[in-house]
Length: 148
Ligand SMILES: [Zn+2]
Image 1 (tube, rainbow, N blue to C red):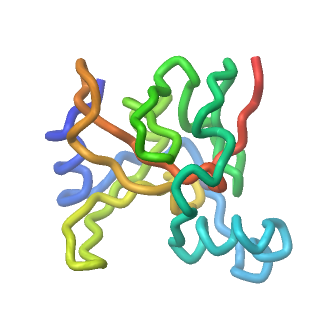
Image 2 (cartoon, rainbow, N blue to C red):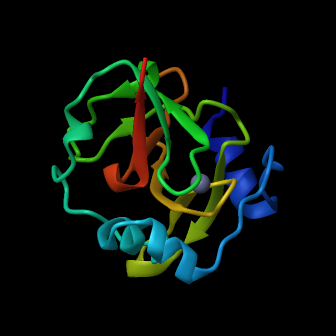
């Protein structure tokens, strides 16, 4: 199980190797995604809180990357954070998510990205529930739910 110490270590010393890499041109991503998905995943945008219906949904399934389909989060580790964005305590695999230090907006945060295609997902914070203590705060637009 990943903890905040692991996350800081990844963001400072480098990430785990993904199972595979998918790289496409900006034009290819743009033609594949809706304008809102493109803005969030490729231009590191943020959706308005409570704008995605995934936030309140508790349907069983696996959440995958909207850009490349890599499996990222399981619905069993989703929790209600009250923030208005889908929130998880762990990725589905240790190497599914990539971490980078983000100092925009005058804050120091850890950005989370799909480790396969570098799609922007959101941020991770050390104020989640036990046992991991992590809160992966993800844009709904970055995810698709594959129902079980
Ligand atoms: Zn991806």
